[in-house]
Amino acid sequence: MLALSHYNSSASPLLSRLSNDSAGKAEARVAVEDLSQPGNVTLPQPTTSGVIVVILSMTLGIISNIVALFILVSAYYRQRRRTKATFLLFATSLVVTDFIGHLIPGALVLRLYLSGGVDPADFHSSDRMCQFLGGSMVFFGLCPLFMGCAMAAERCLGVTRPLLHSSLVTKTRTKICLSVIWLAALCVALLPCFQLGSYTYQEPGTWCFINVLSDTGEVDVAFVVLFSGLGLTSLAVAFVCNTISGLTLVLARLRRKPSSHHSAKSHDIEMVVQLVGIMVTSCICWSPLLILGLMSVIRSYTGSIGEDLSSYTTLMVMGVRLATWNQILDPWVYILLRRTVLRKIYLIAKCQAGLRGNMLGRWEPSSFPSSEKNEVNHV
Image (tube, one colour):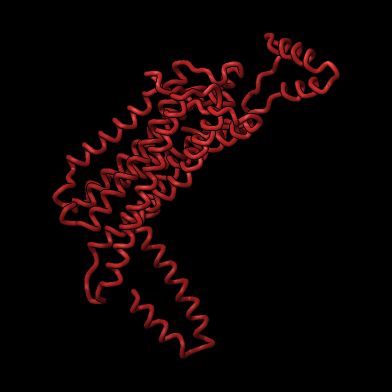
């Protein structure tokens, strides 16, 4: 999936001027027929700056996923703790899925973009390329949401019921779970092949997605409800599981005696922090498109979208652009929210706090030793 760009058409101002004349309808009809003839209309073309933005976005996503994949694979082969290895297997699979999901649909969108997009008359139609592109966007959209949900559930079980987790969760079962996730997302993406929903070209003609705005039927509504419902449910389950895991770790931290060791829990804290980062990223990037898709298809099916069609079209483009950033930001969760990076951030913040304490200590000599002691106790 790749960021899309706006187009500007010169036909709409001409039609608006003709419609305001005394013989608006007749002249507008003549103008449309004239513009439809070859050579009489200038189709919107992508700008050079827009192409550069698309290429840079695609390059950034590929590089980010490759770096994160290298970090995760290295950590996976160094890791001896089974719980951490299971988490890294999930995370590596997620990054690989994001990488492929950024590369394949992105290349197709870039091809359409460079060719100027499909003809406006073909908007809300479909062909084999559109079917493949739309199915890819649905498949690679659902997979990260399903995986984030599964990872959150696995960590919640590991934090709250460690003995049960050690007996149930194995590498083999984790691989089976990943296979089921990929298969489930593929089944949803292939539903239009059995006439259960449809994919169509979306304005401005450079991408394909579920039909939510034009000539929607009951199967389209059901397909969008299924797609958005599964996505929103995955986000909700991940939120609940991560909340339970986080609260459990916080309570364990508060109950821990100052002299006890907590190296085992540091792994759990790192994994939960990363899961929270994945969840927040997914919620911000995917919730607008999932909710907007539901609203659009319902209003289109009931015929109440009316004059708001152009607004919904613009919002859909913005929603897809935002969703594509999920595949760019996900790798940075693993790159930045590692213990080594967090420890360096903590030390930098501690040094800054120490410098501020020294400056204050010049004016209040008696306050610095007590704050130093408190800081050491907290650490």
